[in-house]
Length: 334
Image (cartoon, rainbow, N blue to C red; front, side, top):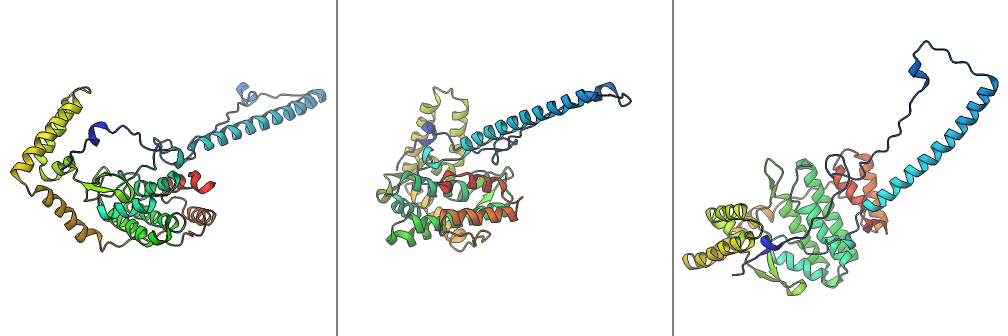
């Protein structure tokens, strides 16, 4: 049994979303506002203002100067906006997204890791981003269920692109099968009233990487599923401990529980793993996948983007946050 300490020591920040005025959803929600004031209007509606010929000529010259200044200002605003856009383009190769994202189904996770083990960080980041952003999203509150399923469909087209362009020939089929299983696991997931997702299988706890990936048991996840009272106590200890004491206090509780569980119920690990296998057999294997993005081209980056932008143009209010993020990925634009 392996005691997993991720809960205490994970400090990796998430990948930022960019955009809208609703707290970072979408892309480029900044708005440039130019405010003008009518000075004549301040005197009332019944004031008559007369200009001489010279005055009119001066006004014309002033208008020309103002137009030039406005043009310069508009160019300056546009340049600033383009600079902001360039800053907000998501560059997977400069983020931590190349770090693995696992489904919790060991054979599937190993097949994906093996297919990617000789790939670049950019390629690994692209694939694991599919799992994070299209498949196993943690929070679906910004999407309808129809959009969530369509997001999974988009992920599968990206997986097809990855298989064609990143995965060694002899591993393409195994890779695509594995990604399809993760997509089905995602499709079978259920959201609570706040949009938090439950996919029925705990994320895996592994040692090693690539083809050397080894399966272990995540004791905290096992506690959560097999002994809810002990997990509630764990949460209480975590909540009531100071920042300095929390790691040691929660570790002590988890370790004592693991030792006691191994003694009182030697079959707990097997039962825990069988629960996951039963869920997969009953809910995942025969799950149907959405085909909203089935016609997206995977021939090349430009073909993929062209067909995706066409879809976005034809469905401007559908899955906006996801599609805005996708078209902003530097991966597609270099």
